[in-house]
Image 1 (cartoon, rainbow, N blue to C red):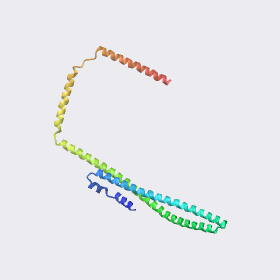
Image 2: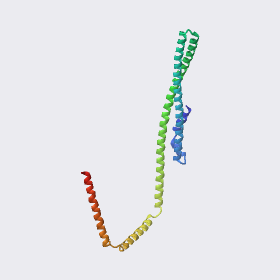
Image 3: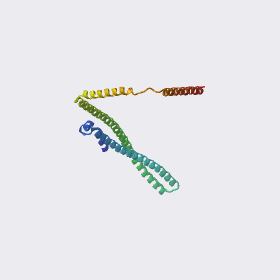
Amino acid sequence: MGLFTKVKDLLQANIMDLVNKAEDPEKMLTLYVERATEEVRNFQIQVNRAVADKIQLEERIKEQEKEIGQRTEQATLAVQQNRDDLARTALTLKKQAEQSLADFQAQLADQTQAVADLQENLRILTEKLEKAKMERNNLVMRQRRAQTMKKANEAVSGLSARDPLADIDRMKDRVDRMEAEAKASRTLITTNSIDDQFAELEKSRANSEIDDELAKLKESLRS
């Protein structure tokens, strides 16, 4: 039960104290959850072993019950054959099996209770671990959000430290210059030649024919 107490104490630790003492809270929280997860995993192994011991006791009880039945049949057969010596031996072995059976049954009762207690403790630890994971995720998100806001505030403070209008004026001059260059280049654009215009008409007519053919195809499929 020492491991249960160890894990329980770990999961009941004040997470905020750990965060406040850590240089990197996110890393510290991750290590904390990993450690708790490993401890719960080790406790799960102990629970599995306890369950295996319980199953083994149940198997031994079945074996003793089977032996008691066999020894009873042997004693009966020996008496029928007038072999009292063999009957006494069979009954002695039966008595030993009955004593072993009583011992195993008592152990099984204790083991059954132990397994129940261990499984309940495991359930409690698992719930606490899941709660710790949720708290870890929440704290990590809060930390990241605080860091982002801090950087944003520092950026705004840095922007306020210099005159942003100077940058805007320079950008305005650049845009004005680009607009003037665009107007000047417009005079260099010539209209399409007559051949280009006829080519556009031919292309339009071809597209119209394709549209008509497509419409006919759809109509044939519907009919």
